[in-house]
Image 1 (cartoon, rainbow, N blue to C red):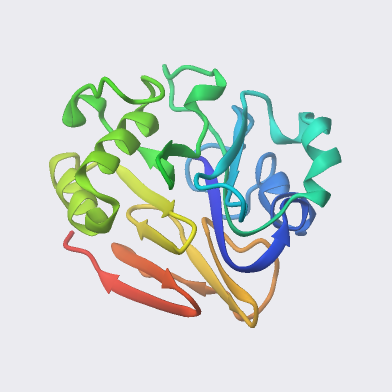
Image 2 (cartoon, rainbow, N blue to C red):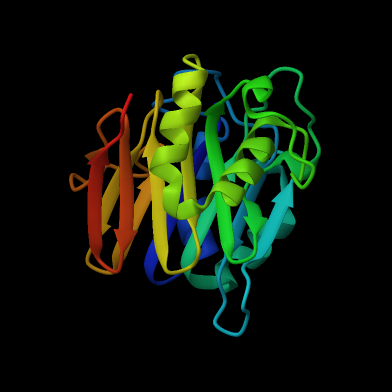
Length: 230
């Protein structure tokens, strides 16, 4: 459930990254190609991006399906950034459907999205989470734990909740950190930057699938994969 992507590189428009790709997040909101859990992602969407004149990222989130937001479609072509994190949501049963439950979640310069599900009882309630939903609770705990310790955090939560799907995606505008844990994840290394995504947004043969239980770190034009303890 849920699909997400992050871009780090030369400035690209939000429309190019989110709406225009032949199998991008817009299409994935109603017809994902690799999604194993759920058929569509119509329970909201969000995008966060870093502008040069701002210390912290800007966010646009909605509880509506991405295809039902003409206001975003009208401005997305003129909004560009060198670092973007975006997601479409398929809500876990029993979770709220308001926009505060839509990724990306934020702490200072950090943005995070979660593609999966986790038992909130394993995490414990976090008073500063943006929502009571499982993904927001996970984000708040990870922000406290430290994004630089994402590998350790995900392995720990996964060991305590064997049924969890813990694909997380984080960025602070300078780097991307992602995990593949019981769901799909791929990356595309282009001449002008790197995309990390739940699934390829086009049929470019340069897309590479991330192995199960691995950490992905993107810094500059370098992509590093590290095996996680299962």
